[in-house]
Image (cartoon, rainbow, N blue to C red):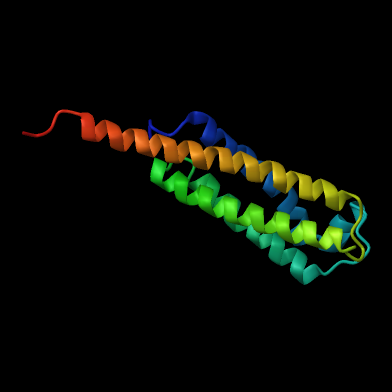
Amino acid sequence: MSEEVPKALSVWFVIHFMIDMFVAVPLFFFPERSLELLGWETIDPLLTRVAAAAFFAIEIESLIGRRASLDGFGNMLNLKLIWSLAAVIGIGWALLSGAQGAPLTGWLVLATFIIFHFVWLYWRLRVRSLRRERAAGSRNSPGDG
């Protein structure tokens, strides 16, 4: 891992990978049973597997890239911010409009995406700040002559 990337950020990526894999595997292989256990009444296995595929793609890339440069983390954080915000809007919209077959656990799913959105927003701002500090430091260091 690049020494300029905070270790805590890499740890967050691994934690997020583990949580999402815990969710994605059963949704992908057993969509009906998984959602029934959570109280869903209306289940679309095709779209459930598409959602699981998105979890797989985002989180496997996060695990692979956990030792990336500061710029690499910035790009991955952009992806996580877009994904989590779109999920918050979509889930919130569905729940507030009385999504058919969605149980109270839908609110837990919404809360989880909100929490992770703010985690990624914090780290995105922090990475942006670290990149600015690095750029300012390189401008202020003694030149080549």
